[in-house]
Amino acid sequence: MELISRLTRLLTKGDVLLPLLARFAFAATLLVYFWASAGTKIGRGLFGFVMPSSGAYAQIFPKQFEAVGYDPSQLGVFHWLVAVAGTWAEFVLPLLIVLGLMTRLAALGMIGFVTVQSLTDLYGHGGIAHAATLGAWFDRMPDAVILDQRLFWVFALTVLVVKGAGALSFDRVLARRIGIEAPRAPGAG
Image (cartoon, rainbow, N blue to C red):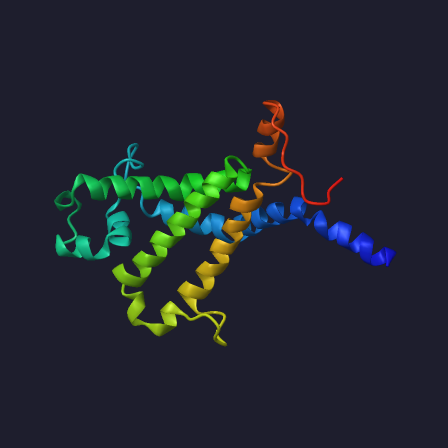
């Protein structure tokens, strides 16, 4: 019984380890993916961060961009604002998660981003018409793309929304600095 009790106490400390592992998994699998995607959206020159490339509009607004003959000047301020905000979000939110800075808010933002990205892939790029691209839950094909894969992404991000960044994070350092005590895991002494 003592062994089970010790094991239970050790697993309860998983509240300390779980957020760090979620941030590591995010960094190892999605950080470079999102940064590479954001890189394709940056326009040329010094002001590329505020002047999105044609690729940004093609990725974010595929049907509208096609309708205007792939001419970004035919799109409105709304399209420009969304393209710029989406590009910045793809750089900034993953960085905040990896650093463990404003982690809950950044992870929540990434959940929103992944949701919009998935809907764009499904409806804007025609993924909904292709079952292989769409994927399906509760099937025998774990490598199907959108539904299966993105569920894991959102789960890891949800861990960070619920648990925070963990012990090795800028969130923890800042909380100590301003005198906020981090919540303790149930049963932690």
